[in-house]
Length: 405
Image (spheres, rainbow, N blue to C red):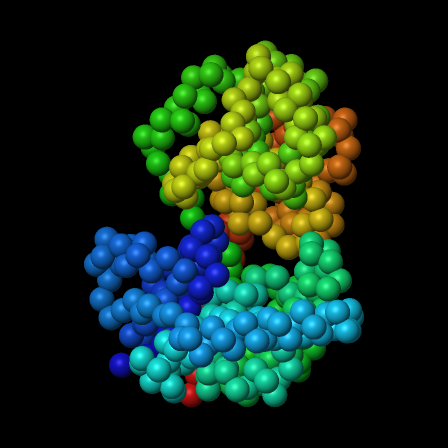
């Protein structure tokens, strides 16, 4: 039986967990025996038992004292280099994921191929000669945000670090890289002149929790009014303040505003928090607003999308896509996104709605227009279902694993 190690030690939250689980299932379907290791092996084991999965084993990895010492030394070198050479983009301490990987391979065999389900955190920003000392003999990677997109979201330094890390994709040990948009795939094929880059459809899981108490409560409060929502992690990039400004003048007898998720105050200034709270308080007659609610389960999140009539997705400086957008399209929910970047390309590809400048009046007008005139393009919707199907997802994983020797 073919062996493979699946790894993502960065986090078990959000899309990290979803992609890890889906890739694991796809590998099992292809006949692999999967060793798996993530940031939360307890919950990974629980999920495997619930599904009664066979031919997979969860592995724990801890850094040895030597590894910890190496990491501290490299972190110190990074700090010195940054002081002496402020424009350096090398980050030696970013090899930490490879140190964990090395320890796992000691348990199962050094020649076992690796599948990194989050290459953005796993592949280090170091010179190739240094990375070769720790990289496995064969590896595959799922890469979420390329360097040219990282600059828009995270700035020049982060972008340059990712560009340096991407050089490792040209190594013979890298057998395949999976990317989430055709633009990314074309970019890397052109840059490296290699056919090891594959398009992986985003996962679109819209299973709902039909007994969600909070969703039921919101529907009662809405009382047949149209629900305009922003849900999930309320980071600054979600443009929450602009959303709240834009819905102030909507008719409270026709529209119900839903804001539910986790807002972490340290991410905002005191002035921003004050404005957000004032805007929220103005909507007390036609809203359900909670900044302290962490949506733990995907099914509950999907249910909140399901009960919404328009979903606000106008991210701030967000160059890549959002899995929420794919969910909304599958659920046939109209959305509002900003102009430019990957989300606009997806909207245009499937004739969805609606691309709006970041201006209060135009956002408000678009909400009303979507409620009254939105229609699904049936032909484009069927194309979307094919493009984002589980069959295409599994086929992409299969194409990449065929590159392994």
